[in-house]
Structure formats: structure tokens, C-alpha cells
Length: 331
Image (cartoon, rainbow, N blue to C red; front, top):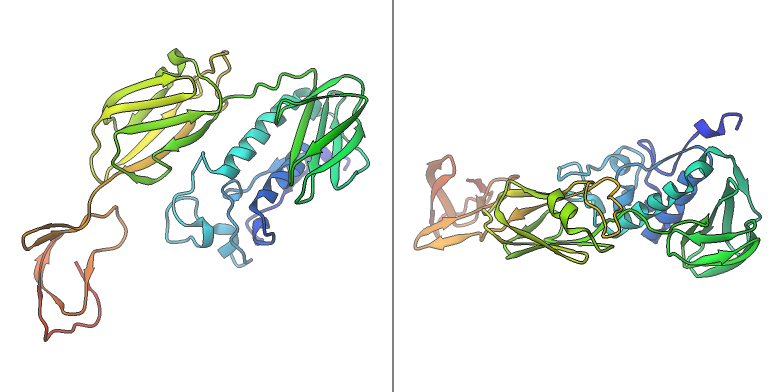
């Protein structure tokens, strides 16, 4: 610990089964992350942990599941997982926003306090107090946090020192800052359509956790490729209408970090999500059947359907009661 500020702390890495494969409740990633990122040293969050990946095994299977949609994925890591509205991502993002409030206190050592009633607590400098509930039920405890008024960055509730009673929900975390401002950077907390969804609706809606400034927010939002339409903002709800989507196209929505709250606080890192324009499949027109799909495997027929010719996406097949090809035929 001579150079404790340089030590790297992690719960997951490339050689081990993921932490969440060993516990029943995915929410345990929150106190784990708080501990490893707020004690002295460098906290590391391994990719996928913020999306609740719980893949097990030490042979690479558990550690290496792709974040993007890829054949090398399994269990709850399937699909595109760059989801900034995932409930666990949002909890950890808020936790990191609260951590930034510790500010200069992170340059001090970690002053451990005696654990009380399953709550682990410590000070970072004179003005920051962190408490972590290590149990799956609500807990309360009293700590000597120092004189002054301390405000919890996670919920805005204040306690008065030097001896303060704190209450945390199961696996809960509190980050109290002396005379602190509990206003955190704004985040997008929900998106419709959902991340990587097929969508054919008439409204695209992003919801923030705070009321936003129309000028900066409308200037910061975009969709690529542009489907047209008009963005509007009422309070914390950003909405796009009047657009035209192409079936099977991928659209990326971005909100740049220049978007600000009504009170003038800018986003920390911006926001990105994506979706696919919807399509109907198969489409049947007389004896022509059209299949539409977004990449991946070929369309196939089997059993009494017999492919008789074709190439490059257009094929001819007949139904023959005497034919039983058995294996599927690629189209």
C-alpha cells in the first residue's frame, strides 16, 4: 500500500468467471462497483458488467462475451448490449456521477470506519463520506462522519454530523458530501424505441432524469441516417415526429454532451442508442414470397419444399409431396 493510489481494483477481468455468475442478484454489482471505484486506487469496470453480464466459466466463455451482436455470445450477453438505458447501467452511471462530487477528496487516503450492521463505510478527505450496504435488506447505522451538513448525492437527503444515522436499501450505496450540491449531470433514462429494437412507429421519445434546456438539447440531438421529422422538447421529454423510416435500415440516435438541463448543467458524456426500421417478413404476393431479414443467416426451406433454381437473393421453389430433401436448403 506504499503506492495505494496506483493499485488497480476489479471484480471482473479477462481470466475469471464474471462476478455476477456467482451471485443471485444482479444488483450486487452496484455495491461492488462502489467499493472498487471509491476506495483509494484505480477502480476498473470490466465491459459488460454494467449490462449485468453473468456468464460463467474461466475458459474465455465467461469473460469474453461480445458487447455487440456477434456469434461469440451466450446467456444474458446475447444481442447488442451497448445499452445506455439498461437499469444496471443507469445505477452505475449515477454512482459515477456521485463519485465525481468527491472531487479533491479522491486525492486523500481512505479513512476506514468501523463497520456497523452490515454497512461498510469510509471517509475520503474531510468532506466526503461513503457507505455501502453489503446485505440484501434495508440497514441503518450511526457513524462519526465529522461536523457539518452532509448531503447524499444519490438521493439528495442530508444528515447532520458529527454522529449521523444513515439508512440504505438492500445493496444500497450513499455518497455524502459536506455542504454539497446534489444536482448531478443529466442522463437519458429511457428511449422508445428501445436499444437495437425493430421499430415502425410514429414517435421517437427520449426521457431525461431532469428538465432540459430546449435550445441546447434540440441542437445536440440527431439521427443518422436522417429520416427527416421534427424534434420537440417539453420538460424532460424529447420527441421526434413526422419522420419516414426505411425498413431494415439501422438508425443511430445521438445526444451530444452539449445538451444542458434547464438549470444549465451539461451532460457528462452524451448519449447514443440505435434501432432498426421495421419490416414485415415474409411478404406474400400471389405465388411470390419475399423474406426480409437484417444480416446473419440465409433464408432456408426444408421438407417437401424443393429449391429448383435461382441465385443472388431470388430463387424458385416448389412444393412436392414426393420430395423430402430432409436437410434445409439455403436460399
